[in-house]
Amino acid sequence: MGRAIEQAEDRIAESVKARGGEIYGAEEQPSSPAFYANAALQNRLNDQLVGESLAGLPLRTRSKRAKEIVCRALGYSVPTSFKKTQPRFPAVNLDIYVQKANNLQIWNEEVDPTRRYAIIRLDSQDVIASVRVLSGQELALLDTTGTLTSKYQAKLRHAGSSSILVSPKDTENFNTVFQPTDFLALDAQFALSPIDRPTPRNVLTISALYDRLRQLEGYVFTDPGVDQERLRGVRLQQRVCELLRLSTYADGGQFPDILCQALEVKLQLSPTVDLGLVSPDSTALAKEIGPGVQYRDSRYAVVYAKRTEDKRILVESVVLTTGRDFFTAFQRFEGNVQNKKLQIHLPPDFFDVH
Image (cartoon, rainbow, N blue to C red; front, side, top):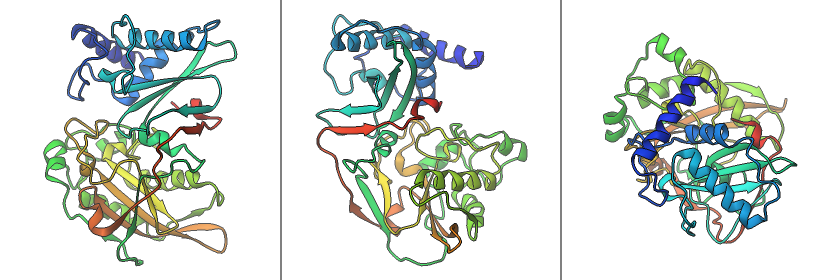
């Protein structure tokens, strides 16, 4: 971890302590100096927890010990006893799971799309080896069992082969927060990473974004395989980053896919669009995007493509909309909803992504 990043996270921890360090206090908001964004939270926990030993402890004691070291790492005081709250750490909006195996189990509650989940990996000696932090949305996407696929799904109301800009303008709130522009200075564009948080005057308007994304029409790439949905998505996002002239491709594993432009990208080979656990028009706060930003302020690019006879993927059209206007172009219908124990088999490389 770079020293500058580490120092920034040290300052957050000091702010937590200065505010009293009460883990059961009110949830910290993005505008607070004591707020950990997901990336900062993951970096901090890796920096402070990796190497800590939980060896020789019964499961219940191990869980308590993990909670204690997470509290100290983030600057919170360790309570006399840990309450059975939902989430376990309300001030950070965080649940933690200690995993030695790859079978993650969540009992007696649904995955909360706005909650953060810290998955702590133990090695064969019960020493903490790595930590991943995900939102409930990202966690649910890892489920391949069919227990939970998508709470919200939709289908384009008027299917066709033409690209559409559903929303001619961004939401008023988005305009106020980010002051988007039709043109970004070249040096500013090439300095942007897709996993950077958006900043004022460094975000394209939705109409300018549409002009760039329409260049996806006719784009062809090799199909990595019928069962390789994730890799197909990566190939598309790489091309999107090129069209937006970003510094490089990067995947933070968070919503939205292209964070610096508040843009979620959906590659569709079938009519049904899986939207995850949050409805695009939700007025809930999308804290990773920025203070005061709601999910309805984000932008959704639904990219329709088809397989060709030579085993390639051909992009045919792009539908771009704000979350607020999403259901003016798409018909909403309910997906599958999980309401019992959720078991997720974490992929082998899950802890390799930081």
